[in-house]
Length: 418
Image (tube, rainbow, N blue to C red; front, side, top):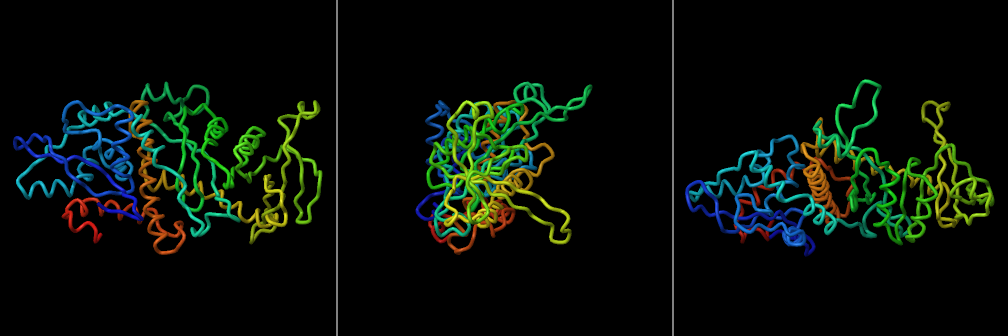
């Protein structure tokens, strides 16, 4: 077993002894452990009641690992992903005269269908959580954990089932978009890039709707940041009711009255659900408004005006200039999305599954793959005393790919050293 700070991280498979030269059967083996505990996989399988009643060449534990590994080797075929996943084990079997016949493409598809999406969903929500500590560089602002919410879209294969369930973007009359799309809204810990909650939905459902539901994972002691596309009274009210502080950008068409001018240039105001309810005496929420302008360093005539609202009303503890500088951490969510869609996937069509249930399963596998890479980065950065954002995501991904077969070839007594 490989352990980090007492927490086992694993990819759990089953060992096969051969009854005949080509047919795998019964025994159980150990493989390396990478960021996802074997016990968590088994518990997710048990809770969703997908345990097999008979021994199969592709047991549920192996299929869970395969779905996660699809994101680690995103450009390879499913059979090649499976071969990469158990490469070290297969090599060890050959040395002792054993042989495992790799399942065909249709057998892998059937195994994924038997597993379903519930196991991956259960596994994701049982594992993910914010991990930064007060020692983590850049993760906190005055004892408030910085978290960011945003959304993106993933291209899906052009199948009738995917188009019917997830929908397509709008296009000119007489044409249609090339791919159906799934919308994904994520909640990210800015200082580590760890995605600790996520929701997916059809394309036609807007980010605001799903973002409100994602507030289930924010709590007291957090500072939530969002972009102007997510601004609304409902968003402010829901965040405030969870005891979470917020710092969000507001659109240019939203106006606030300067009720109380503060010494740092910001001012206090009130936010209402709508203009009509304001006239009817509806009880508002007090906010602090921060306005500033960013100038191009080489072209002074190019200026971008920013307006932020926040629940941090204490101008002495949280000066306006300080919050304006810290708001740039909101863009860490864009870097996280880049890791998901470019560095981890790197495919023209992000998802390869042809049917909606397998699409949901694959997206959760993608999120778990990102979690595995990022949690390993966090553990390494904590040991070295540096910011997790200084370590290369793609470099760590390459290390994991190389390490999988090497750890599978190790003897049990050699594991503690590594």
